[in-house]
Image 1 (cartoon, rainbow, N blue to C red):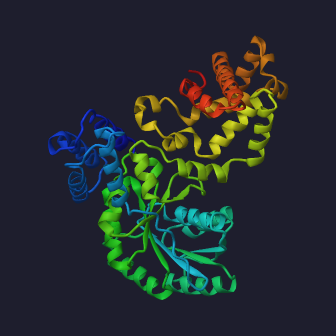
Image 2 (tube, rainbow, N blue to C red; image 1 turned 90 degrees about the vertical axis):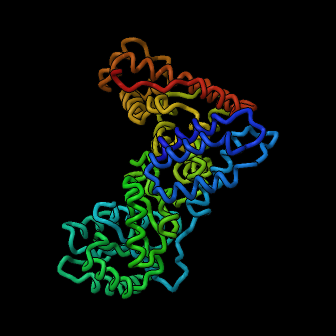
Image 3 (cartoon, rainbow, N blue to C red; image 1 turned 135 degrees about the horizontal axis):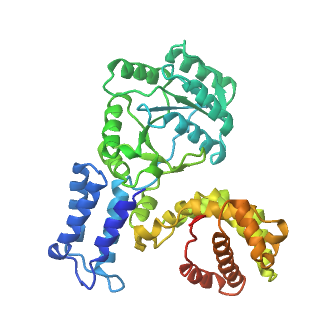
Length: 454
């Protein structure tokens, strides 16, 4: 998400160097580029105008601090305004009510609403330690109820049965009573996708809302629809008085127009963002972290939190002890690291959160993708345990066997072994005093491996 916007803003703001003061003249071109970048990212025109004006008001006449360049000063101003534009701070769910706290989820057809309900249930169960029930009041879409039942089983939520021959109001009323008997903390009600221009469907959801009186009414929007997402959320807010928005499919959106338009247009906070297809791919929306990623400064806090949740601590501790004892980093260790990286969203997901990635050209970033690393795992899978533990044993005939077994070429096996050697050297540096700094310098010199057969 935000790739094209990050590139444009990064190039523009880096262009302001050697200035002692920001003036209307020297930031004119930069602001024009910022305006163009936002419009190309499909941010609503009214939002772009007010945003650029706010930057100009703060920037003109601003003295450049001795330790900062003019570009860095303007970056800070743009960062602050981006944070304010997206809401200032994270707005968490308000579940402080007598259980069960009822959460209603609404959205357009095809926005990814039912999948988002499952992701939200997974988040509440695993991150907030809540007991969660879900129910589908979607009696119109074929297999909608079955889909939610399947997803509920996957995430460990209680599924409250319903059927297509029931009225949505009857389903919701019964579900609230059932949730009380189950002593659950949260009941999430999935509703049918609908268009805001469909009067009958909007009347139905208003009646449903009045009946169950949810503590949270969340609207799911497809981030790839850009400013249309914000406009649709605004229309639904007139009918339902939303408490927040969930941005779905942000991993497929390179522009970011929805994220930058929703709060300004609707007045409602973005509470979560969907960042992938898996049921754990839902994250709280932090405006400051998102702004940092837009400006290419990374999102280290989210990276640390993700590592805390997803890295196998026992394996990590075992590897650390091994390195401290001076033992070699072998291919089995390398495979573990690749799997851990995959668990954290793959290399592309990590790159988005690393500081300084905004300075790397998009063409260079595109050379690194998860398929390349998946190919490396396949090659290692084709090795014997002895070869994984003692890579120096891998000679020409073994390379040919490994290549044949993994459906790759000998040169791919050679590239993997070279990559492993580089990692081995870096891991050795980490085990020594000041090793982390040395490792980071070493990583800068590493080149991404190519995919199998290339």
